[in-house]
Amino acid sequence: MLPENIERFVREFSRLPGIGRKTSERLSFFLLSQPDEFAGELADSIIRLKSDMRLCSVCGNITDKDPCAICSDTSRDETVICVVETAIDIFYIEETASYKGIYHVLGGVISPLNGVTPDDLALKSLLMRATAGAALEVVVALSSTTEGDATALYIAQMLQDKGLKITLPARGIPVGTDIQYAGKGSLAQAIRNREEMK
Image 1 (tube, rainbow, N blue to C red):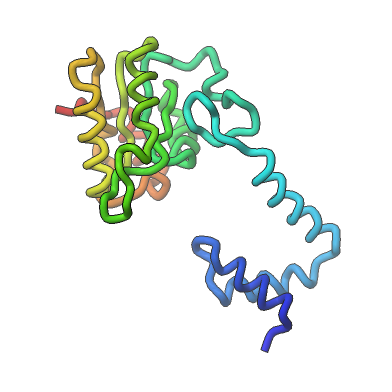
Image 2 (cartoon, rainbow, N blue to C red):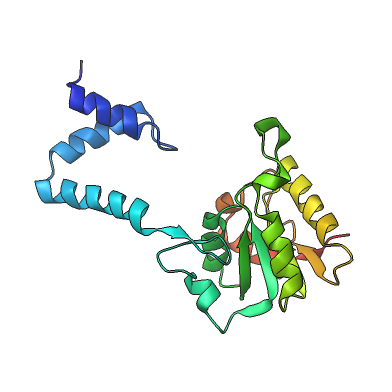
């Protein structure tokens, strides 16, 4: 039986994605073997992560400055908006160095089984950004899942007759794969060879 403080740590850390009970137990014993400064710095970094980060008021990216670095970058191509599910998708697309436009984070995908409706997503702000600014193209870079495809279709219908080119990344991303799990090469190829939605 583990002491109460270790058990609490294990219970809390096991709630993190990809971290099970055994990994949490190993982490707790590792942390106990480290100097106090290490634990203090780790705790401080977690607190600052939560307290200092916010959503960009323009695109919904996670940032410590508002607007975010991408929205503040005047060299970005504002005629192309890439729509993604979550802010982490921006990180993976940026890693490919194949896209120079701007972004819009939806905050998920339409999923009636999980109670997520179009009103739960940043679709109204997407419509405003796509039609009020310099946008000529909207790249719908959502995961190749049933929900992702349904959301992409919803966006295409929402933006039809607005004079915008609506494209999808080429299907270099395997069907059923989240953007964040696609390889860098596959993601770069998919972004470069995006296809117009019909």
